[in-house]
Image 1 (cartoon, one colour):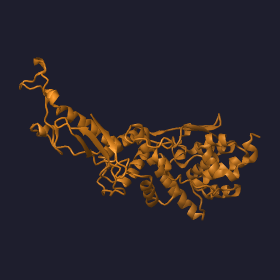
Image 2 (cartoon, rainbow, N blue to C red; image 1 turned 90 degrees about the vertical axis):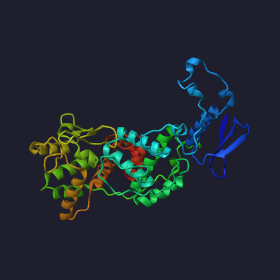
Image 3 (cartoon, one colour; image 1 turned 180 degrees about the horizontal axis):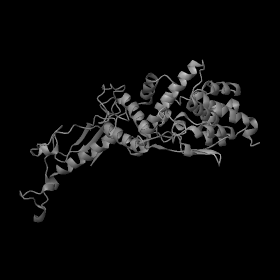
Image 4 (tube, rainbow, N blue to C red; image 1 turned 135 degrees about the horizontal axis):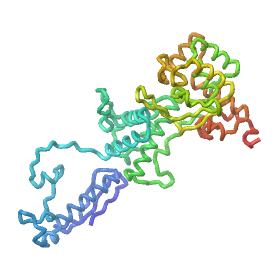
Length: 405
């Protein structure tokens, strides 16, 4: 009855149908480059064409199907004008407030963020929503209702169709929004996941089966052979000695250097997660029952080897630690990761040291690889992939460990 097609010169979708009243072929533009939206408009148009068919109007229905006004409800042939709802076309008066029109993009973004809210921690969900809000503005990605009033964000991209947005639009936005390569890679992952969700839910058509997700063509923003900072044995002793006046900071840094945990994993570690008898640390998802907050893990839960030297120092610290947390805050509660970094920075500045939590994790990785650990074993203990470890620490991998010697 009706069909849609796309014009190459404008990338807009058009509809072709035969007018049942005149029998003439009609071609009209749907004024959208979005194929999903064009298909919905096609279905609505087909329903209108059926209602206007004179042959259908000439068919009499059984008396039992006729409405109270003597007219069959299913034979209503009033077609709404442009911008008119079916109720307005039929002359039905309604006191209900008129709901604002919601675009297909707003629906996709809303559904994606609802999915993120269920799959991610609150911090990760808020971060992804913030990235999309910078790209499309608060008109498409509004602030949560429970959030305080904030200044509206102007959209960096004025396009409102997922098929109209190009890879270059996203790449330009990413490179202008954030300067660091790590942040750019995080932005890239967010857009790639968003389009992956849209494709799986048929909001974006697949036009290239070799690369179904168009965001896969974005630069990887991976820095190869970049300089990393790590501590040697003498520097480790200097760092731990500089924190002797702050046992909590000293124990936290000791865990980062000799167990390779991430900063967020270390501050959410409980004393019950340290198994001295078995010689390992359980990196799991914990909850702070005092504040009803839950931590977050970048990867799945995993065990980490506890060396005898680190176990001895932690035993001595736990004997004087009355908190349930392995590295408690000054108030003996769960220590926020940024507050821990601020306290460490102040202590290191007083001792004229420049190292931070990232340097401690690099120290653990380079030391284990230099000892001959396999990439597979280290990837399981650090919660990284083998390609990631290779990209960062290729120069510290012992050749014999590559061949299982």
